[in-house]
Amino acid sequence: MAEDALQTENVGVKDAAAINDDQSPRYNLIIADKSPSARKVLISKIMEVLQDALVKEASDGTQVQELLTTGDCDLVISDIEMPKLDGYKLLQWVREQPRMKLLPFIVHTTFNEASAVKKAIDLGVTDYILKTVSPETLARKIQDNVELVRELVEKKKELVKSISIPPQPQIIMELDTEINKPDPDMKKIIDLVKKDIALTTKVMKVANSPFFSSTKVSTIDRAMAVLGLKEFHKTVVLSSIQNALGGGKHVSDEFWKHSMLNAEIVRFIAEKKGSEYGFISPQPAKIQEFENQAYLTGLLHDCGMVLMLNKFDNYDIDKFLKMNKDIVEHEDGEYYTNHCSLAAIMLRQWGLPELVCEAIRYHHGAEVPEVHLSEGLETRPLKKLWSVIQLADYMISLYLASVSCDLESDNLWAQAHASAMSELNLESGALKTLKLTITEFLLKREKK
Image 1 (spheres, rainbow, N blue to C red):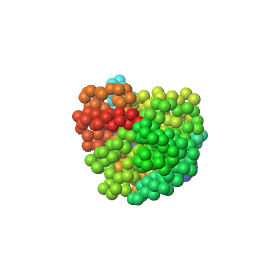
Image 2 (image 1 turned 60 degrees about the horizontal axis):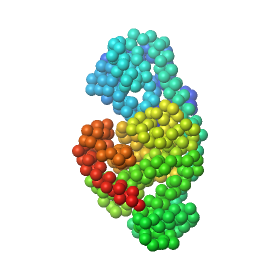
Image 3 (image 1 turned 180 degrees about the vertical axis):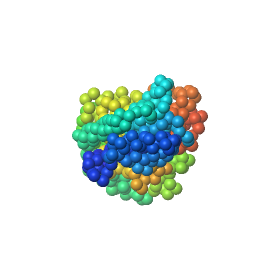
């Protein structure tokens, strides 16, 4: 399971069996150049030394995009000057794709100016070579860069295998199955909770808080009546998750507060704005199911950080929570894995809906790669939920910092998250109104 999840996150990375298979080329390459003659020369140089390579050709960047999204690739070699999408823009696009962060990308050009090299480096190029390169040097660069990535991926696989995945809190699935029915059986829901003494105690404590009751709540049945089904469900889910993940090192209250706030905001938007954003079905049962999945996604979106904390002695959850960008890049650079990947692996093993797993897997990404979605998963609900999580994280950062943020800051955030804004049909000016609404909602929740 863990290996499968990693395999889908790295374009063209083959396992040892595939590499050693006589029928499989060792190197799957894509070369891009507007000139047919230049492509012919380049292929000749490659095949002179690397007879076990498979080379696909493209005359512009858009053709490379299509090849990358429909097949295997170990390395891209691209010229800079190309029609439709040049080499720089292609490189930028590649580095923005979550699955292509490690994909080796070599610029192969006649430009030797320092400014051209710097621009490519800033965009994340792997290597920069001139078209006068010898076949031997070209082959060595291909081999070295591809093998390095394969080595990194293997290290990541071994690392993930060594990370302990806590057992699934079974009650979450059982509870959701019953709650999502058109006519939930309240007695059955209560009986499920009664099986767990610690969980029952937690629910009773919440029900006895001044916000919910002025009189003593002494039974779980009464707690259900006082809390209502929705609040009862959220309390049970949160407590179950805390118990499941709490077997290792201490997790700060700040982490759980951040997770709870995100869950509340995501569900609030799903409830209030779902039909407007177009990700809620008109069937009542489907609406309830999506709202519950939205809450789970918000609550669990950073749960991989707890796995990171338990595995690595120097992992600092609070530091990563405060990072506004490049969180995944920092984690991958230091630990060969990241909390998004680990969370998706764990939640799949727990049997959670694919919508939840995929939204969490990509929640720090600039985009959700449509062509690599799991089979049978609808694109639109996933993109909407992914967008809401990004919006919720922004709202939380403002709320916890007790700042309202000005229009300029909203505009900057909107520009950086243009895809999410587009998915939600939001204009940057509408963020102010939405912030006020959510802040008012959170202040009411804080009183509990």
